[in-house]
Image (cartoon, rainbow, N blue to C red):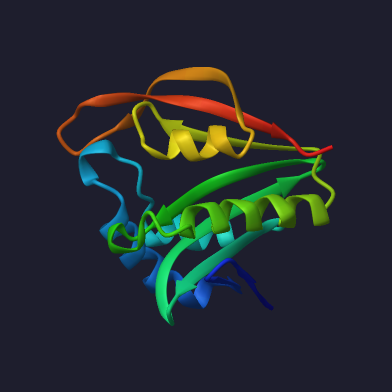
Length: 158
């Protein structure tokens, strides 16, 4: 099933598209921060119940993706990536709004996420109503051994 949010087409995807997701991550996530997952991690999480993957397309091109999961009445946004060439065009907002709508449809009362301190996406999350609820010290480990804090955010869906 697919839906349009603004000029962005959102469609469900699955394990068969893990290579696309891997390519989008490599292009979107700077390796010095240690945020990207491996293909094995993506395949592993996609095999679990309550996990879904959404791919965004803009002008017929893959623009980004979001990976989320639901357990009981709590959801978590695990990954959200937008290709650098497609940023500032509403793709990230469309993905986030699509995930929020999916969470509501699936009965979630709250949506959680973690994001690296200093990540520009924090402004998007705050604009969409997420509130900072905590910090995980030294959560991300980059390729150079540097560590970075993660900020925890939540959005009440009620």
